[in-house]
Length: 268
Image (cartoon, rainbow, N blue to C red):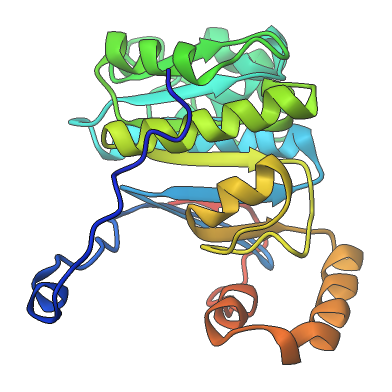
């Protein structure tokens, strides 16, 4: 795969400038809400989620994948796992089935805490989604070419990656992977939700920053942050000190209001 195989630069006359098609805003696929934490996943773009709690990222990404697959049966959803073991992934997918309202067989009972009110139905037939697929990649084995091959085999354009850092451990490999994703996005339609366990202030939507994650942020229409209360307070204090140097677009990205307060996490 060629690196950064982007569209060629072109010169436009004044009339041609106004004939250009506006960039699509993307369809809202799902919304994750949990207290002050919020994620919106939209189609036809990169969505970047920053969260230091990698286990939580695995859980959110898995639930989102199942919920989107249930909500859009005409679309195929590829969940890429680079971190979780079998037990954690099975638990995550089972809880995603519960969030999506799918019937649950009693054999899934071990994946839920005893105090959860979960109903099981052993008479339900075909409870599994055929438009959901898991690509399980041991740490540091995922490449953009391997992802492209799986997308072709599964005929999908919607990908959720539960750990960007564990896809490639070395800085050079991670940079190559990020560049490969950008190249893949230019070659074919691609909707991608990428979870990272970094919490960097300089990573903003549509804004170049250093390193592989900064490159992904430059091509992401939204950058969401999952934070502890301490992290959120520290982040807001640091951002206020820097706000005089930020553009209005970046300011809106960081200060997106929380429209709802939830006591329990939800994926809609």
